[in-house]
Length: 268
Image (cartoon, rainbow, N blue to C red; front, side):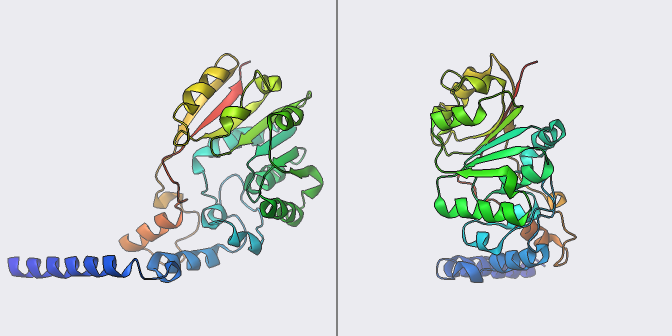
């Protein structure tokens, strides 16, 4: 029996060594997980399948810019479902999305809150165009305005006024310059959902926390691992332990480091 175990172990070790040798030379699109992901993406189609933005339609052109599978599955930033659902229930009149990408939050929130005006800032011109196309495809274009890079003065103008306002921000470290109630006083009355990039600047968490602690209740949200229970479709390619790992990997967002977010709500 020990000989069989040794033989099995040797075969397994050889298989792993072969994989290690082939991985650097095998094109990414032909690797087993990439093939699996394409099949799952085909099963998902062009509509977000789960989460607060379920039903959002995607344009095929966006696939050239982003890894869309987590977005199509609706598991993208699943950690934020709670704050997003609260925002939808609140029904904010104005939503300012800084670092809007291709429009996942812009269009998702515009659809979920039919009375909201949505202001999008995105410095990539190709992505600006995608936001416009996504908004048109989903019937919300008349309530969405798309702008370029957001500077402090732009944010001040966007959040100014009497409207009930939510700011959603993902700007790879530029939150240090933008999220400052001293330079943008109206932030004191806005709800803010921001991705904190401590791997860019280790002081970001403490600085943002100290700036908003006097005026906001702050909930810190940590990135968590995905599980098969998060997968919104009925395992379209079958089940089993190996496939379970494939489904979980399909939801991976390819983060450069473990992320966290602040959900900040003005104190009553």
